[in-house]
Length: 378
Ligand SMILES: NC(=O)c1ccc[n+]([C@@H]2O[C@H](COP(=O)([O-])OP(=O)(O)OC[C@H]3O[C@@H](n4cnc5c(N)ncnc54)[C@H](O)[C@@H]3O)[C@@H](O)[C@H]2O)c1
Image (cartoon, rainbow, N blue to C red):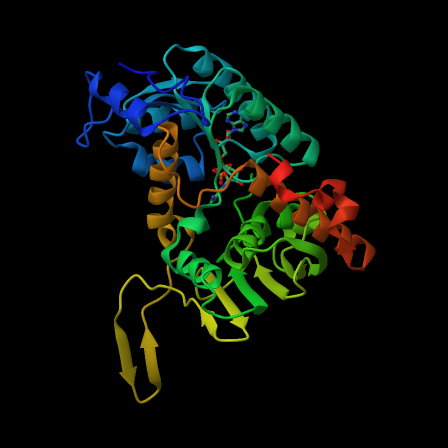
């Protein structure tokens, strides 16, 4: 039986209801729960990362859609499911509970809105849309239908960042004074990957904007950014940046700083530090092995994880598990919601404006809704 969760509404599903559905399934997973019937849109890099976790008794992949037929065929073959070149055809097949949107960013808003409007829960890769109008139209569809929407800010599921968020929330560092994020990719995205003005902020730093909000537990009120194009000729030609520093003013007056770069010779560098009145806490980069080689020239640890598929392997698995739990009406942990996706995109737009104008940009200038009480927003 597939499609058991399509009409499970976010607000009114009890654990009891989810349990009842699971016991009626003919295809129960090891946990005794019915698998969630999931449609996968997009068959590129991130879809292949998620595919590792989709080969699970908790999920039935109903199909994979990508206009690139070869990519769709390849991933569908790996997952033992049906390839589609039109995502609309995949969504129209019966019995889909949930949709995972892993397509190019400029397709997300339309696909999320279509999936939500037909009653399907959605896990959408970041960003939820490339502009605020797209975010708002997707969120309106989600609100109308009451489905679950999670957005792929996978770093919330990283054990180190989650520890920091918990420590700050529990008062473990006292009052937050400063937050610092280091975010360096080993290399720019592949040649065909979309680049354009503001792309660095809406594509890469958007993860760090979300981490800043998640770890601090605070909203940002103003953004100042500086950036250059130094290492990726394709970014430069498209009017995009590849090196940047962003400062954030939080509502409390605490100051955040994000440094990001599209190139790093030593691997994928992802660190966060919070400095407070009572203590300072930080994460270090995990290594694939714990070995250290020491000689007369000093000590050398094993190289860092190369990039996101390896570094965040556990986080992607936990992110998917949280989404499947939410589809069943269970606790979704720290998953990013539509409101988080919107807040991060507002920060990206403020950073873009700041570089353009060479000034600090108050968030309310980008989005008058930031002045509204948070409880009133989706
Ligand atoms: N959370 C993360 O760690 C993470 C990492 C990488 C990428 N991403 C996000 O995932 C998305 C895809 O990135 P990627 O690196 O996989 O890119 P990619 O270029 O490797 O793959 C994108 C795929 O989407 C397909 N596509 C384009 N338009 C489509 C449409 N309308 N419908 C269906 N498929 C379509 C392309 O043919 C391509 O196969 C982007 O939004 C990106 O921001 C997230």
